[in-house]
Length: 260
Image (cartoon, rainbow, N blue to C red; front, side, top):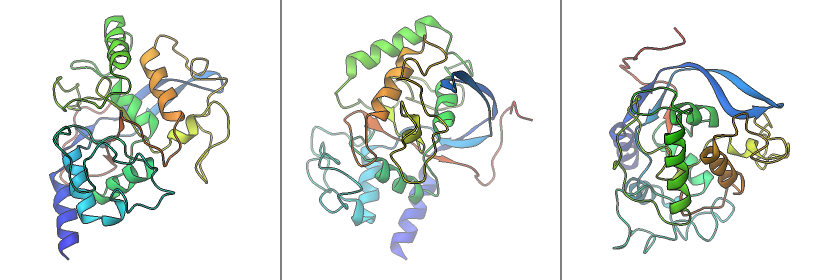
C-alpha cells in the first residue's frame, strides 16, 4: 500500500502540459519522401525527468537500482554518474536531467507515472516549437544555435533544467540540454533490421542519417538521430535522458487544437 501511494503521489506531482494536435511534416524521410502526419493531441512532461525524481523511483522500485537491475535491461554504465546506488554525490545535482539510463529503465519510469515514452514524431513535433511559434525549424539562427550547443556539450553531463524559457506549449529543454529516448527509436535505423522484438521499420532510414532527412538543414536533428540509433536499448550515454507523455489526463483544458 505504501509503495502504491508513493507511486501515485509521484505521478500526480509531475507537470504534464497539453500538446495541441495538428498537421506536421517530419524532417525524416520515409520511403524517400518527407512524412506528412497528423499528430493527435497528448500530454507531455514539461521538463525531463531529473536525478532527484529517478532517485525517488529507484528507492521504491529496487529492481531498477544500480547493481540490482537485470543485466539485459541495463549495462555496466547504468547510473554510473551517481556516487552510490541510492546517493547522487556532490558532483551531481538533483535538478539535473537523469542520464546514463537505459531505454528499458526510462520506459519503466514512465509506466510508474501512468505514462509512456513519446514516439519519435511526438517528440519531433514538440521540439519544432520555440517560445512563440509551433514550428520554428526554418529559422537559420535557431538551427545554428542548437547545433553549436550540441557540438560544445557532447560527452558532458547536462546542466540544470530550466535555464532557458519554455516553448509555446510550455515545454522546456528539448533541443540543447540533452538527447532523449523515444519509444520507437529502434525503428529509425539505416536499414530495416529493428533491434527490439516485434518492432516495425515504419521509420526505417535509407542509407544513413543524412540521406534519410527530407530537410538537410536540420543538422542538429541528424546528430540526435545518429546518437540514439547507435545505442542498444540496454545501453546508456552521458547526455541521453528522457521525458514521458500521456494520452489522457483528467480535467484537461485544451488550447487551440489544429486537428479540430
